[in-house]
Image 1 (cartoon, rainbow, N blue to C red):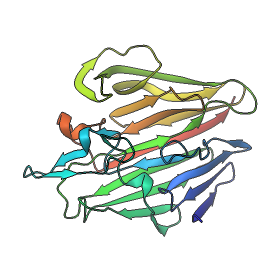
Image 2: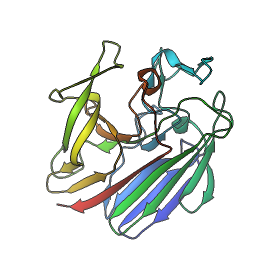
Image 3: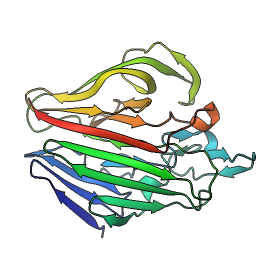
Length: 257
C-alpha cells in the first residue's frame, strides 16, 4: 500500500505517491487527467524526479573528486545506471507539498528536497540538491509522462525548438558532440532551447513548461505517452565533464483549448 499525499488547488489537484518515488501519480486540471498511469514498470508512468543523476550513466560507473570509482545500480537499464535513486525510493514528507530524500551509498550524506506548489492554473515543481558529505557528481531532472491521447480531441503534439542536439552514439549515450537537431521522433538531449516547450492536444488542452533549465530531454517513441524533461545537465554528464547547479525548477501552465 502506497502513501498518497493529496494537494487540492481548485483548478488543479495532485496526488503524490510518497512511497513510489515521490512522484505525481495523478494530476487533474479541471476534469482532465494529465498523468500517464502505472503500466507495470517503475520508469514508465507518473511524473517523477530524477536525482542524484538524470538519464543514463555509462556502465553505472561514477568517480569522486579523488578519482575513486563507484558502481551504481544498473538493474533498470543494464549495462547503464538510469535516473538516480529518486524514482525508486520512498520520500519523507517535511511540509505541505514538500518532501525530502536522504540518499543511499555511494551518495551517503547527500539529500534531495522536492517541492510542489499549486497556483491558479499552474504547478511549480522544484528540486534542490544538498551535497552534505558527498563529493560525487550530481545532476537532476523532472520526468513528466504526458498521455498521448485523452478520451476526446487530438493526439499530443510537441512544440519544441532546440538550437543544438547532443549526438547520440549506438549505445544511446550522448557523445558530447553538439549537432544541429534532426527531425523527430526523438529520444535525445538538447540545449539552447528557444521559446517555451509545449505539449498540446487539439480541442482539449495545452501545457507549457517554463524553465530556465540549460538542458532538456524529449522522448516521443512510446505509443501511449510523450516526455519533455527539463534537466540541470544532460545524460552521462559526469563523463562529459558537464557540471550542474543545485536547484532546478519548472512551471507547468495549463490551458484548455
